[in-house]
Image (cartoon, rainbow, N blue to C red; front, side):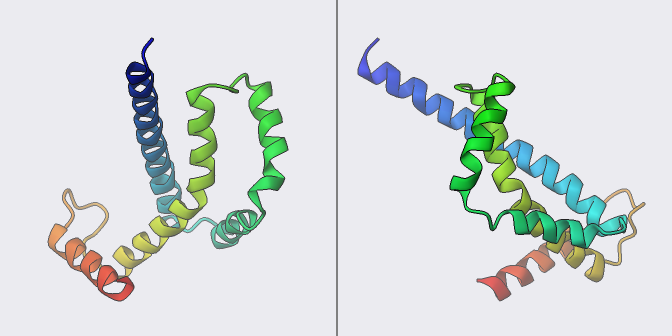
Length: 135
C-alpha cells in the first residue's frame, strides 16, 4: 500500500467519524433539550447542572475508566468506540446550547406547537438576535 492511499484511508475515516459524531450529538442533544425545556421534567435543571459539573473533571482522570469500559464492550481500536467517546464528551455542551435555543424560541414565539409549519422568519430573526449579542 502506498503512502498516498494510506493517507486517503485515514482522511476518509476522519470524515466518517466527524460526520457520525455530529449526527449523533445533534440528534441526542435536540431530543434531550426539547424534553428538558418544553416538557417541564421535574428536576431537569438540576440534572443539566449535574451533567455540566461532570465536565469540570479533568479528562485525564476519565481515561482509565473509559479504557476499561471500551475494552469490556470490545470497542477498543474501532471507529464506533471513537464516535461513542467523542459524542459523550460533546453531548453536555450541545444539550446546554440547545436548551438555550429552545427557551428563546419558547419565550419569543407565538406559533403553537401543534401548528404544521413553524414561522421561519421569526426563527431567523431570533437567530440573528443571538448572533448580534454573542458576536
